[in-house]
Each structure stands twice: as C-alpha cells, then as structure tokens.
Length: 97
Image (cartoon, rainbow, N blue to C red; front, side, top):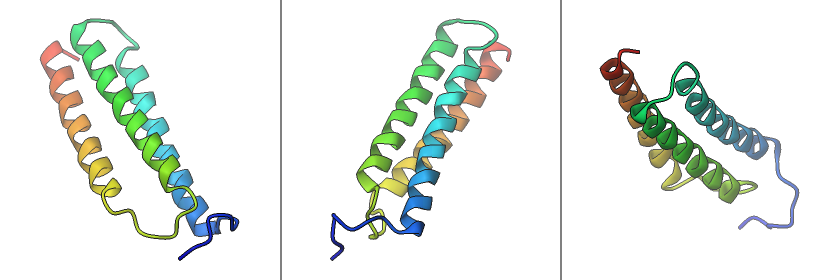
C-alpha cells in the first residue's frame, strides 16, 4: 500500500496533469460550440461538454497521488469523450454547422 502522506511521484503527477488537460479541453469545446451563435442545440451540447469536463476533473482529483491503476475511471472518460464527439458532430450537422 502506498503512504498517502508521501510526496507524489513523477509518473503520477504526469497522469494527473493529463487528466486535468483532458478536462480543460472538454470545457474548451463547450466554449467553442457557443462561439458563433447561441441556440437550444448548442446550449445543450455545451452543457454536455461542461458536464463531462466536471466529471473528468472530479475523477482526476480523486486519483491524484495514487499509484494504483484506475478501475472505472478510464472507461467513463473514454466512453464519455467518444459519446460527446459523436453527439457534437451530429448536433452541429443537424443545425447546419
């Protein structure tokens, strides 16, 4: 077992930064979707992107400093990101870009 008071190692810090970078990029997508015009579909897509960003950020905070592999977090982030990409493309295609 790892000691929770021990300083984080370099690999765990890199992993935490990667998770946070993923959360920031999902939040950025929400802003980009709302950039040109605001309508109901774009607001819904932005809320979905912000929700995914919040989930990823919470998971990254829970994982920080742990050396054990993430059990359920990776599939949640993977499927969430994939679903968001498909829904964003479909939504933007339906609304005409």
